[in-house]
Image 1 (cartoon, rainbow, N blue to C red):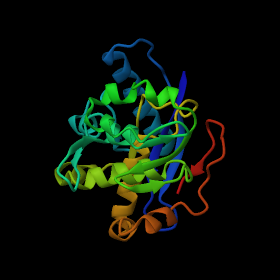
Image 2 (image 1 turned 60 degrees about the horizontal axis):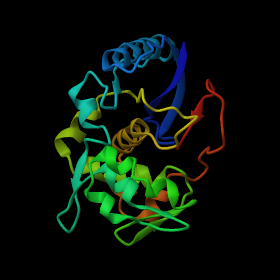
Image 3 (image 1 turned 90 degrees about the horizontal axis):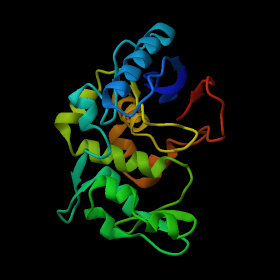
Length: 230
């Protein structure tokens, strides 16, 4: 058995994203078919335990073409100067460390190469993010990634229009004990902002976006704990 989070967009206008942990049957192995078996069991238990009736796996392992397209490795956007970037390469290339960065040449790399670039491990402690002259601090922890992902999603209107019918989002590859940022959580936040009529206001400025995180829970937590993330 394993536990993974499902991120649920909320519609009450008070909180935006609810994180619930789901216990499900884990199918070991690196094959994509094994990952998809685990995803199916995760979604079945999300329905049984929490009533999430139309979940979407957001990863390259998804059985849905939409979920695959939403992977940070696949989701692309065009910058103001005409460059085409994947979310993953943009995120990794924006990292600033105590001994270097941002390494903007990473923007042009394939997503896996960007993630594995040796400089990201050898440049010391991460200090901030810098994306085309705009600096973001490390707190709130997922703010920059969420902002980057949601802006990229909006530049893909055909994809963005399809996600809002779903009521929960997972990423089978996301392990909260090892990672902080999660593409499934970012999609859930997008849907919540969309349904609550707050999307345009939230993206009008960095300060507006950061205001969403006021009072956010960011302390370590135990699997099974219910958290209102934003």
